[in-house]
Image 1: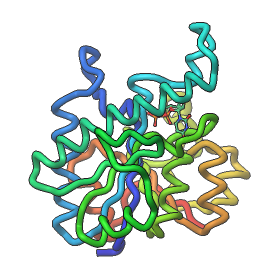
Image 2: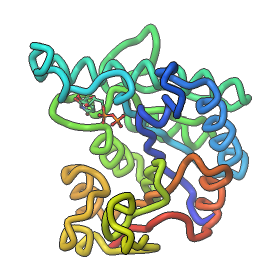
Image 3: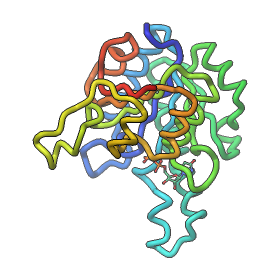
Length: 236
Ligand code: UDP
C-alpha cells in the first residue's frame, strides 16, 4: 500500500446522493462504508472528516435572519449528525470506529484529543472527525487539512463527484483537461478551486499532498491507496 494513514474528506452533499428524497441516502452510505472497509482491511489507517452541507451551512444563516456565528455552529452540529450516520454504516460492515467531535458532546461522541485519535488509528479503528475545527468561520475542508496535519496523515483524499481537477469547468468548456498531477503553486497561479484557500494553504505550508478523486466510482478509494494514479494529485 502506498499510504499508511489517510485522511478522507467527504462532503455532506456526497451523503445525500442523487435522490432528492434523502438528506442521507442509505445506499450511498452503505456504498461508502464498503469502500472504507476494503481499505481498512488492507491495513491502511483511515481517518475521515465529514461535512454538513446536506443539512446546513453557516453561509445560509444570514438569509434566514440567523446570526452567522450561530449558523456556523449549526453547520458544525450538522456534521455530527452525518458523522453518526457514517459511524453506524461503517460499524454495520464489522469495522470498529470512533466518532470524535470538535465540540464536546459526551453522550454521542468522544471529544477530539489528538493523542487519543492517533491511538485509535494505530489500533485499526476508523476515526471520524465531526464538528469541523470546532470554530466558526472555518469549513470542513479546513478541518480536514488541520486534522490531517495533527494526526500526521500521509495525504488528504478529497472524495468528490468529479474525477479530479480540471483546467476549466468541463461542463462549460469543452477544451477543459484533467490534471493527473499539479503543484500547489500552479493551482494558485491558475486560480483553480481545489479547496477553500485556508484549507489549501494549510496543506501547502505543511507539505501535505491532496488528491481530488471521484468517490462514487466503485473501487477508486482502494486503487488510490494502493498507489494507482486516480484523480489529481496536488503536491509541492
Ligand atoms: N463549520 C464551521 N467550522 C468548521 C467546520 C464547519 O463553522 O470548522 C460550519 C460552516 O458553517 C459550514 C458548515 O459547518 O458551512 C458545514 O460544513 P461544510 O460547509 O464544510 O460542509 P460540506 O460542504 O463539506 O458538506
